[in-house]
Image (cartoon, rainbow, N blue to C red; front, side, top):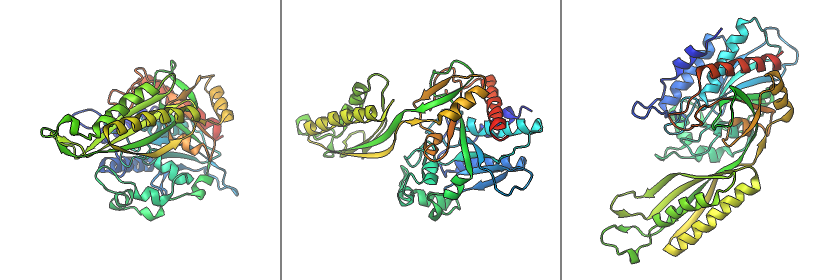
Amino acid sequence: MNTFPALWQSLLPIGRDPATGGYRRFCWSPAELDCRAWFETTAAERNLRPVTDRNGNLWAWWEPPEPQRARPAAIAVGSHLDSVPDGGAFDGPLGVVSAFAAVDELRATGFVPARPIAVAAFAEEEGGRFGLPCLGSRLITGAIDPDQARSLRDPDGISLADAIAAAGADPSTLGPDEEALARIGCFVELHVEQGRGLTVPVGVASSILAHGRWRFTFTGEGNHAGATLMSDRRDPMVPAASLVLAARKAAVGDARATVGRIVPVPGGTNVIASEVNVWLDARAGDDATTKSVVAEIQAMARQAAAEEGCGIRVTQESYGDTVVFDPVLRDDLSTVLGGVPALPTGAGHDAGILASRVPTAMLFVRNPTGVSHAPQEYAEPDDCEAGVAALAATLEHLAS
């Protein structure tokens, strides 16, 4: 039973910007709430029990039919439904849609799981609204203090707590959920590959690069763009521009450093900014290299700020060390899928956060262009269906 195309088309219009073709499914926004409603409806149509946990993560449970004295740990599969600004259609939703389609495929064959299966969609994986990636998985595992999470604010100044309350949920429940974690025997996340490393339809992940986000705040003197001589300026945009160039210079070899967001204050065309906030994303194959790259960028930024007579403040907003996925589970799945290749990824995922608490694995679906986090992100229909088949085979193997 191939239900993937219809499921995919039912989700595709939600949160799509008609001007750019990209997606704006920000956590707890109207578009993301529509995605949540889609998830619950899709689960109910399959007689799966939908649950929203204390941290806003979504679950759809397929329980074994026979009662058991000791409930076995579940096989969880899924990904996320939120997006980066103007993100692509596949990053996250492909894993959720494929999980539901894999359940349909198994049921069509008459398969009855001996262990529970749960389709999952984690909240705020991208950090597109509140700035902290993998927030739902960080909360459930205790990787972030719940008070810190509640106080996170979006660009409009709305706190996470207020956004959750406005959606009719209770922000006071945020925090570690040992009971929910205890139910998960392992987690398998299917995802579109976010590069050109996969040359066959499906592969497995070996590791995630060490990565983090840093906020640089440069402070200077706001003034008039026309009346202030160049020699009299303390312009924070100058060291901000130097930071962009420093990131390119420091990221050598396999390291990556990116400035994707700059916010000047007050942001007028004919105004010298009084403050400029710059966000740096840095990644490398290991913890030491990542931190070395960031240290080099910081040193160059501090020097540029001093030369311009500006202040500088650096805040680490998130960080994750190198994640090596469970090698036994990885090799087991590779064998089940006919010896598919294993490859590292430079992108962060909920599976990387959960790996500290439960065995996790990832399946990748080929990306022919290598483009991700952009409207041009794409996967061929045949490759998507190969991903569903691989996920169904994985569930059949693990839940038998």
